[in-house]
Image 1 (cartoon, rainbow, N blue to C red):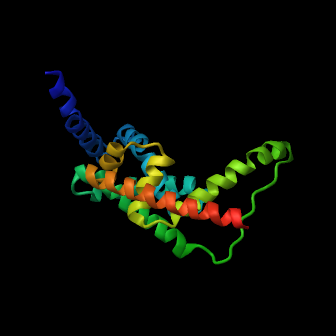
Image 2 (image 1 turned 90 degrees about the horizontal axis):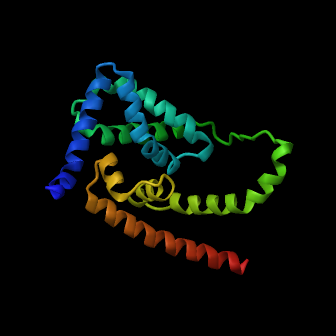
Image 3 (image 1 turned 45 degrees about the vertical axis):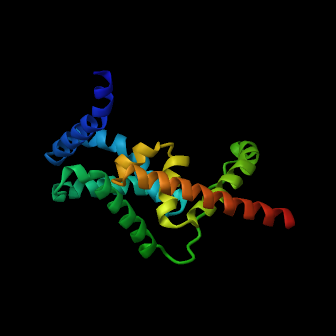
Length: 194
């Protein structure tokens, strides 16, 4: 009996999510807020795989505003995650269409935090380098890796949120990690020769 309850968990969660999507489509803001809580990491990860990190938080908000406005057009409530992922990817593409070439964005310097920034500089540079390498991977590997490594989502969560099968997520994570290791090893060798 306990085993049945465990295997019914994904179906129950799916029914609950379908109810949330239906309620949000009918104007329930609380239901939409719960969907935001469930999907914000996925949207953040997809955007992080595609746009400059400084733009991600604003674009997450834009994606959810677009989704709220377009929710009435969603035909199958069970496809909400995949639908939201498509909106997210399209918004990332729009970002680059609208971006001004050679636009320089500078952050204001806060002298009070200069010391802490210097201490974090090495870690930030390493994280930026790894993110750069991940962004160079094929799409099929890039998104699942960022959702797993940056957003902390599990394989089953990634599958449930993106609409991919568990098997394809598992394979993409495995192959993506292999490619990432190879590229990072090549980067480390190149850095040691410099």
